[in-house]
Image: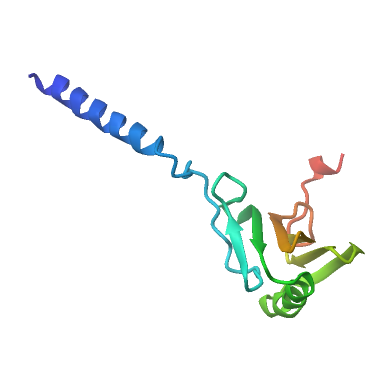
Length: 149
């Protein structure tokens, strides 16, 4: 077999093997949900990321992330943990809303970064969603003149 044909055959075998392993149902579809080290997750909360529920990215100092967690931690305990630990990472509480006893939304800011926490207790389980992003137009990251128009 000539070398180009042999190379093609090897590549074809590797591709078939890769397709077969990705079709095995492992749930790993190449989406990253790397958690940033500077925000807090209460004890007992587990990241949900099997089917793209959680994802994140970082490039050139810009960050974004959407993280979903579930756990048995009581809502009040999770919120108390956040209020105590986030300031230790230099986060400042910007807003805190609780429409009822089963829900709470807290927004933390640090420099040009923002972390929005939404927690809900339902059917004996606590759900938490964290949306993390770089804010455009903050004091440390001003908008360009064209963005003001």
